[in-house]
Length: 431
Image (cartoon, rainbow, N blue to C red; front, side):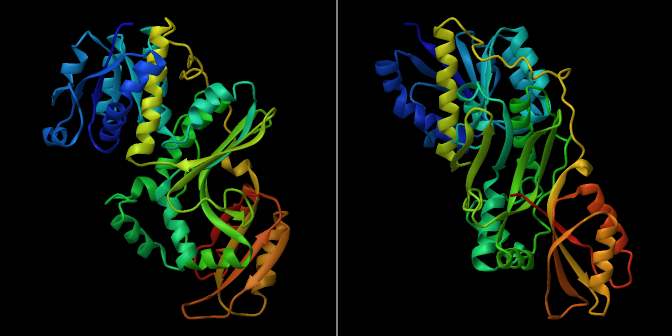
């Protein structure tokens, strides 16, 4: 049994977690799994970090070339993040014949074809379980456990920051800004939370999942992404009154030979299985033709949950090496030329929550209903609240199933009416 040497770049939160897990489990891997692994080198710009980590006999330095130039290292772990340095480093490692494990969702979502093609050319593998869902084994489930299924629907809560904010707004009745501040104080949100609250983080993960379930490359930026910054505490309260919970969802559906991919807040019936996913937890609800529905649930981020996924990938790669099968689970479909027909958002159909802010005058409700009716939109229920300050009153319409195009056409007409006092709040309803 020959030793497999590992080089790790990035000893921050997740990298530190990987070092701790390896320190605890290397003996088990050798004695019980017959896998002789060694953390050979660790690289990080902040050399002070090494004094707080059980790096063992690993050589610690600040120069990535120490790993790239070390021919004895066959597995490289990239935990730096971003798409600048990380992209160049991963491509260099692959070209040198090193297998790569990464947690970098942006890298896979934005540069997946280039990365996987480089791996294929050099007969090495790239594993990325930790890029989606933290410690939840969603990627392995899709690539391996559910390979006998046509997975035709994925609905997922995959951003802990947004889920924490919406959960606290629901439980405490607080406005968005106050709960965002709480999340930052608890370390659940970054000082600059834009990537999370504007939907980008969920979008990166949705792009990866969409590529996996469709068998084609779905690029980030090729589908609509909407965040939660416009969700008010009033919307949260109205949703509760109507029997719904608001969540930020990544939605992937196969439909009429195309793929419907989108990220946006959605209203879920209070009894929906995803409605109970609260705080920083993540969940992925998959539906396949053979297995039916499966829910994967757990911590979607954090030092040790994400480290768990990284170490799982390391073990997979090492097993591939020792079994002389370096690309046991190929990613052939992740190529730029292998595209799928994407369904434009205006062609989707859904039920809708529409909150209008209008002047309190006779005939307003009738006018709104007429505009909706002119686009073939049927109304399921209407709720009007008394004026409580401000320049208008809220009127809430819940529609039956309607087309996005029809809804947008109707809103364009309604918002031109003299009684309209603000832009309409639109939230799609996911049953």
